[in-house]
Image 1 (cartoon, helix red, strand yellow):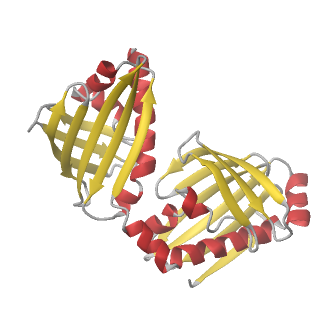
Image 2: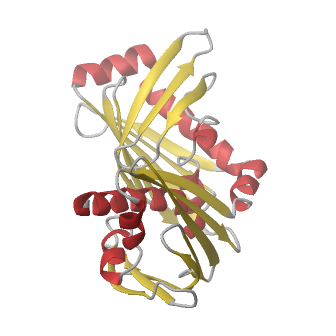
Image 3: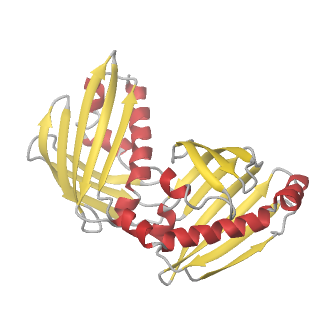
Length: 301
């Protein structure tokens, strides 16, 4: 994929900054960071292989992986995601590497400029990482591999043919309480939009044929409306609703609730009419949303 990069030390003596421009839409480049099967294809310098053992792409989530070098040496990594703002920003802490990395994704006329900003815990560690592990060259090669991945025909096709989402979460709360969190607008407005989005308007008529309308507002003031209705409501075990997203995509959502030993498992299945920026960010959005639902029912339990 055509592109160019720049790797250089930043103003501070603890930094490494690496930039590359990809001839690919921002949502697609961001998507390559969101799933283990994607990131294993490109993470690391040339000649290295990455195998993920656990991957939880959400703020506070952890990514465990092992990198294997050309000489067979292995390097275990534990990454903690500190901030995720789809599709523009990721902040992660690489514990073994001793650095915090901020990744930014900027649109440039249909292309995407991605910048990796490493900040090490000390200047000595940064200098050692460059001298012994070639961290600056490794960052450039990693972005080259990322560019090759997002430019591959099979990668774009795999993203575009992913019109469904499956998620599960178990809450330490009875099923009736979790179901109630869906039942009134004042409840739904408190957890339905992933932070930092807010919900300035919410209408919930939880019955078959009832209205379900939500406006989610981004920090810059952009509104993302959802217009839908409830198609099936079986209290307290099942909710099905359909509707239209802000980009014109139609979505059907099925929520099932099962209780065991006083806890509630919630399964979410969404089916979309086509792949879009919104659906590519749906997994991380719903993951954060379920975190907030857990906080809401926990506070009321």
